[in-house]
Length: 311
Image 1: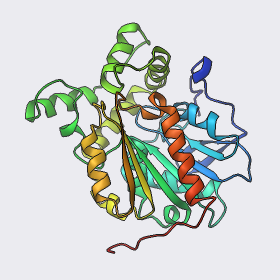
Image 2: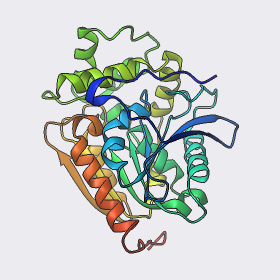
Image 3: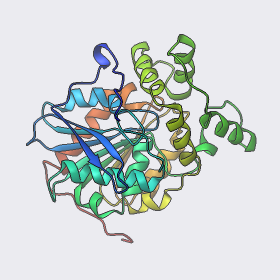
């Protein structure tokens, strides 16, 4: 049974979709999907990250929907998508392929943007036929392909075994997050956002993250702790832009730099000063602008040039 995802209020509230539908993944998992904007407009597909939901993309949906068909979906177990016992990167790839098949016409292409675990979803799906059929270009936001726990700076210690062990314990905690209190917001802001992030944006992220069931949060933390998608990066041959916050403690810029160096067709790396991990919420204009540029070049403009593997 689907759950009602709590919505933020005020300017951060997610827009009402033009229509909602259900995509069914390879293993039968049901995914809540929303479509915003005109049906005949160029398509954008947005994949959110760990502990988030479609509400995370509210700013992008609001700004893009006037001239784009914006497709967002809740990752399995998140938002309105029911929990599923299968939590793997292959399942994430299956889910994205199911969403693309459900919402795009055969051969229709879209810009696909993934934040954090959403970016990992894109990397996991990079070699899949369904992804290659529909991906014109990609934006990877605040994400990495491996060594997530070892490189994380959430725990303020020097890099080493102790920090890695403590980070794994913190990110993999089964403890409930509880209500959104001033202390809870301070902790979340320290771990995931830049020091200058506006209070309403911190509030928005806290409400979204705290709404994620703790069993789902814990299950996916185990997947992230052992993540190795370096092979997926090499298979991501469509034009791909990389964006990160320079103050990101959860996936520090070392990950974005590694992605930019390894991608077969990287369009460049943008590092945002003073911004943390929650780039689509912290720097919405920049993220939306990058998506808009990719659509204009690779969807409504000339057909994208694909690079063959091994070239």
